[in-house]
Amino acid sequence: MTALARKRIRRYGLTVLGVLSGLVFLVPVWWLVVAAFRDPTEALSSTSVLDTLIPRSFSFAGFRSAIEDGYLRAVGVSLAAAAGTVVGGLAVSSLAAYGFVAVRTRLSRVLFVVVVASFLLPFETLSVPLVPVFSRLGLSDGLPALILPALGNGLAVFNLRQAFLSVPLELAEAQHMDGAGHLRRFWHLYLPLSRPALIGSGMILFVSQWDSYLWPLLIISDNHNVTASVAIASNFGPLSSHTQRAFAEVLVLVVIPAVLLLFTQRRLIASSSTSGIR
Image 1 (cartoon, rainbow, N blue to C red):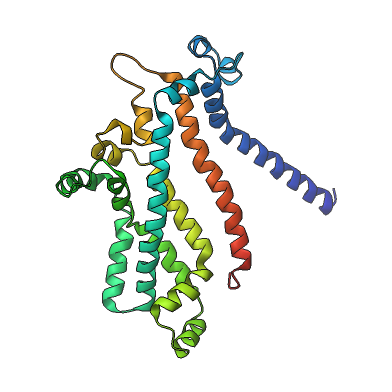
Image 2 (tube, one colour):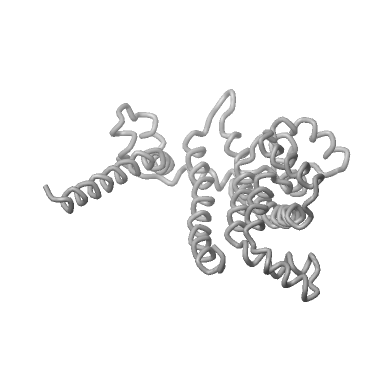
């Protein structure tokens, strides 16, 4: 067997392995889609794996029930909270990251270590003590209660700082010689050259807010302001459960960040190829 034939066999083998691995990871996604569109009576009568993965009938009953129950309003609340978190979080994180890059002192290094350690601490450990604080400030039951705790994200600060460190010092020194201050250098130099990191950090902030469950459950008591994840949990109670509706709502909850990820991935690749220093 020639070297070219062995190379082709290896390539085809890796391709087949990649396809099979992808199918394995797609099975739970396919099961979720099938469960969301399956007729409720069929869902309860499925007894085999084949019946679970291949439906005999389709129904939109779960989606109709979710709409009637006000799930679209909960999705809107989650989208508004996630959008506010992305905008405000990028502003806070990028300014903090620039400060750690522009002002390099012993204190700034210590503070950066504290910031890095902060994203290793689960937010759930701080949720319960924060509830009375927000209540005394009158910030509960609204978007500010959802957005404010998520603005300071240590992982986003770390990601942006690493991107800012890759900006050539010659460019920053040239702008400084031209009389540009910190704000001008931050806005006209560091941010344009760090677009991939900004997009990645924005996705981190979006997903962290979108998947949040415990904090919205603790701080939001008005049923008209609940988030999508909390609305899904309300389908299961001690006396009854709405499984079909829950599957439909989970599918919506999964599709929105998946579509956003596909869009930002294309933008990330495009910005990486045109940034000039990547």
